[in-house]
Length: 118
Length: 113
Image 1: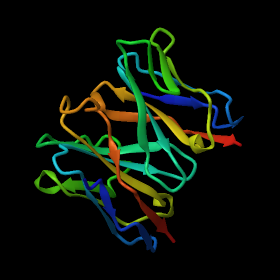
Image 2: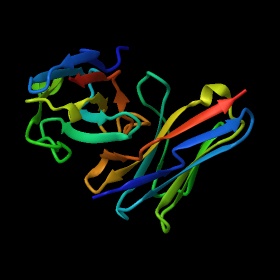
Image 3: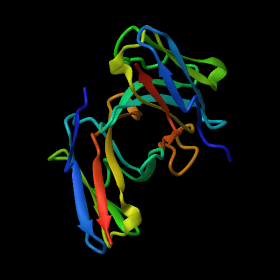
């Protein structure tokens, strides 16, 4: 079946502009995560959505970052007033309800959006 | 909060050799430890995971060991092949449950023919 998809695949923006990154999770997956991967670094947790529960926003680096998930499916990560240090690959992942599969905790990643702030 | 350290940052081996990557974590309440493989230009994919109620898990050429007392876990790859070349990330769950993962900084493994 279709995996996690993200758009755009690449985004170049000028410092100070706002950007929106989109994530389409795997159908039926209740959990959705956003990570940031800077060059040569690990995956930095940003935010986590689980069903209708309040999202865990503890990883958002500043109030310029926000995310929403509409209808329990598609998610949008918004970065306002972008800075050069925001340049990174933004990865989205989703996972099925716990216990629904042998690997119920596996996170399925999308291909990422490479953001470059000039 | 949880902190995960991963070593080495790069590892070069000859085809057929074994490779070992080590991670330490700080939060004694962490109870889930997955390993993800990321090939160049591709997305991370889960290769093996272990929960805190077991000390070792194997899947063909890969194995993971966990020492809860010392708060460290390791990935072992035997009979390495060129297609094992990738960046490997370890991770640990936070107190809030399995889903919120804290990742290590990754190990770039290069397997030379």
